[in-house]
Image 1 (tube, rainbow, N blue to C red):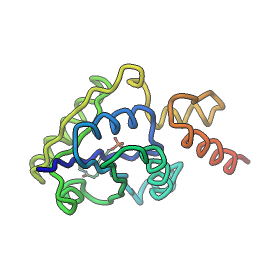
Image 2 (image 1 turned 180 degrees about the vertical axis):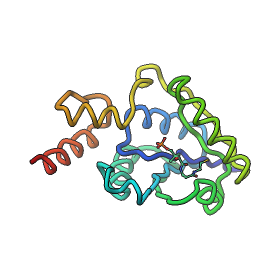
Image 3 (image 1 turned 90 degrees about the vertical axis):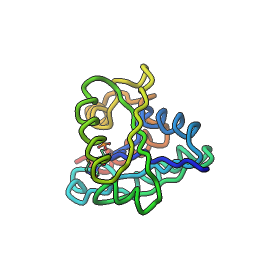
Image 4 (image 1 turned 90 degrees about the horizontal axis):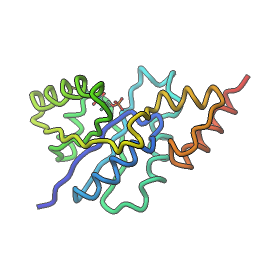
Length: 164
Ligand code: PNS
C-alpha cells in the first residue's frame, strides 16, 4: 500500500528547517505533498505570493522523488480529504511549538480523522523561523545558510524592489 502524507505550512518563505523536515519525511512516505497555505487575509503582509512560494519550494525539492507541491485555502482536513491523504507530518522545534501544534493535531483528528506525526527538527535549525529570517534580512543581516540559495536570492530581490 502506498503511504502518503502532507507537510502543510505558510512557507513565507521555506527555510532550511522546513526543507530538513520535507527531506526526511520524503524518505518515510511514498508520496509527500508540500501544501502552501494560501491565506487571502495575509496576502498583503506576505513577502511572497502563494504561487511564488510554491515555485521556490519546487526548485528546492526537484531532486526528491515522490514529492509534490500544492496550495490550499480553507481547512487542511478538506485538502487532505480531496487528496486522499490521512497523515499530516510536521516538525517540532521546541516546547514552545508543542502546545499550538497539539491543539491543531487534536482538532484535525476530531474534524477530519487526520493523524499528525511530529518529527523533531534537526538541532542546527531549531531556532529558525520564516518571520525571524525575514526580520534579519530586512535589517540587513546575513541570512546565509538559513534558507536555500534560491530563496535567499529571491528575498534579496524582493527587498530591493520594495526599498524606498
Ligand atoms: O507554517 P505555519 O504558519 O505554522 O502553518 C500553519 C498551518 C498552515 C499548517 C495551519 O495554520 C493550517 O493548517 N491552516 C489551515 C486552516 C485550518 O485547517 N485550520 C484549523 C487547524 S486545526
